[in-house]
Image (cartoon, rainbow, N blue to C red):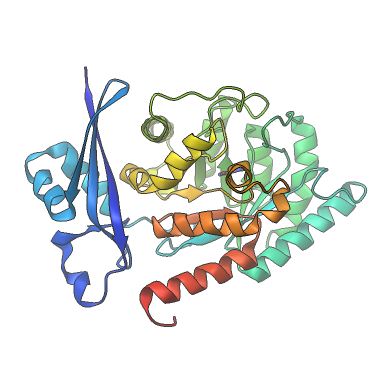
Length: 358
Ligand code: 9MG
């Protein structure tokens, strides 16, 4: 049975100027000079079960790589700088602001009123510091019913048209459907955010490949309607990593270059509280796939489960804590509702770990 090896860099720190030269004693996270791991967990898996975990110093991981090609390749993928995403550099956490164009989000009348409200909301998020605006017309909350292609297009296209050419932020289309992707890209969207990782319809791969736009591949187990019924994994973190690796390979084979791919563990999508926490505490392992990582934890139900806060709008402090946990593990994009609050938290976190103002 084939053995698979994973590396989870741990004990992360912000190297001071003199430390930056000590390459051998640290594992650089995705080419960052400001984020490095001093230890690493090498995880070996045979079939579906974890065989063994070894907790090593970063130097020992590097020494093991000398005689082990699989570990050397993993280390190289962890450490390689990530290419900018449509001009967005990924050497610090970038914020993706959430713009839901669904009836429960802007329930103030007809299509025009909703589109105008969504454009205003997106502009506010940009002013607050969003680098990307994620426009979605279909709710993917647990239990949500799908909407038709026509209805989704009716909701999102006027918003993208209202923003295109007027915003400096990148516009992302949050959809699982090929025709919505195609129409959104034609209307001015720069990238695709797909919670089904281009599996919902066979044409999705073709549309994304032809567009040449960056694409976010999110892991989900099941469909939004049923995904929380009984999620099951042999090993959630490793299963999600393997699934994303297969999706990256499929996308590459379809003509989507690695430089255009972002991965996302899909917090809350077919996951129990335990699964979500395994993912949130193991995010550095995903850097081994060699592409940028996006984290979407904002206002999600795991925060309610941990804190007893039932109203999602009151989960801002928990959302910020999750965003900082992601940033501390080198996540390149944070998908959030509360841009101003997250931006402020990141500014303070950044300054305190560096020990000086920007
Ligand atoms: C649309 N959507 C809702 N939650 C999300 C998440 O966690 N990641 C991504 N990429 N999209 C999401």
